[in-house]
Length: 255
Image (cartoon, rainbow, N blue to C red; front, top):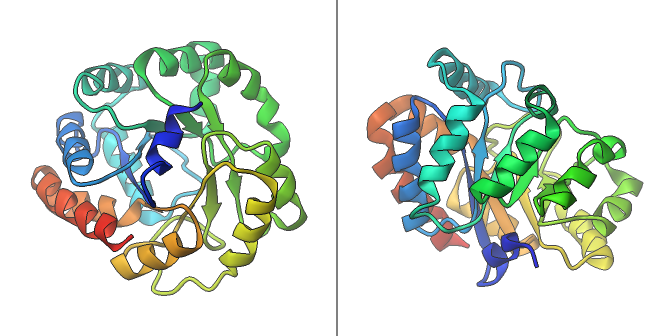
């Protein structure tokens, strides 16, 4: 059984996202440890990319700051290797297909396995093209996480049946970012998912408050938050980890 299931084995899962290297890897490491200590069940680690098409302005900014700071994929691999000495909760990488292609899919995914990365999310990888990476992911026992969007419609059942690790349900159309209100009929999407798989599902995009997290976790198995955490890093820089830890605790407690 995938290590990712541990994140969902003790109630609802809170899943924060952070861009590696924003503002630097040292701060990222302190923030990740603060998140783990304050109840994060699984952490999404973003590998920066110069054209992050699924991201809103906040996470785009984090990508650019990390890249301007000179962070590389190999540095992130070394960073995760060090993190794994004391942080044991599941990790997944979130990046773009071109990052994996340019590194070499076999080399990238085998490195994930060696580092203790449990899954891989590629938001620009269409479901129909997942076989570009799926055999390699299975070879190295790294879950390729599928995404379901409000526009997936009659493809939801098909995607759910083949899901690995967890299903990432996108709460609303558009890019990542905080939203004051989420209007998508997520309960109907989750109902179709439940009929077709036992794989857990978590909802992301647009969640920023404990109230929103509670509402989303009532529908699904967990809530995913990225932009609200990146805003804390953007505002407080190296002083952000304590604030991120407190934020994660408030979100986890709300579930």
